[in-house]
Length: 254
Image (tube, rainbow, N blue to C red; front, side):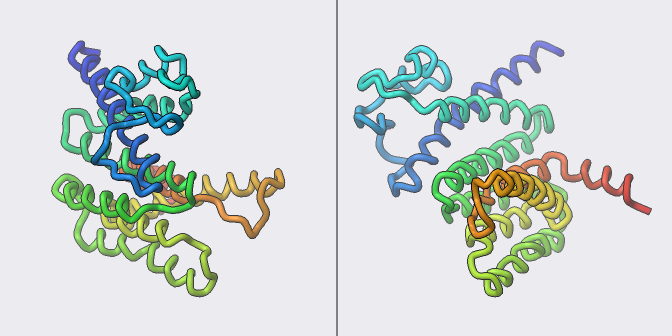
């Protein structure tokens, strides 16, 4: 590998970790109704304002021994793991698209999906503001993703409309946030890639739900957060949806 590409991979990891650090702020503040644009970061326990040296992604956690500098409360390791994940996702997007606008678009897309996933896991809700942010990325991505307007419009309704109707037949079988997220992702990916993403989401969610039921951790009336599985499926569909479609057609096609 040429030195310039090594540098770019390292650069994407650093940028990804920094963006993920901000995503951690969004995950914490948005459900509490705290502005993510105003106010300095603070320790949730002692509420002491954090300085720049306390906010270096990954490194601050290591140098502080995983504890707040001021009150010595343990810092959730999840925050640091998300920073590592952000770095790795930045590298993955660059690996997939190289020096291209789609690297930035796909990275922005997945960072929003990470925020949606974690908030859904924590609160069983998907904020409308994040769905709108996905819509903004969708509009920006239009010139860079070769999918027709018709395919996008079909994608908007292909899954979301049946789920919306199902909610009238079986109340609360799907969350409204899930339906809106699927609709917006369909507008971005088109109906074919949307179905790839939904297939991945349903299979993984179904396997996990089956495990929880067999281990008696939940029963049939309980709900699990479906948002993380939707997000994972849609990101895979964005990066490799066409490859997966061709693989499927090669195996099961005429």
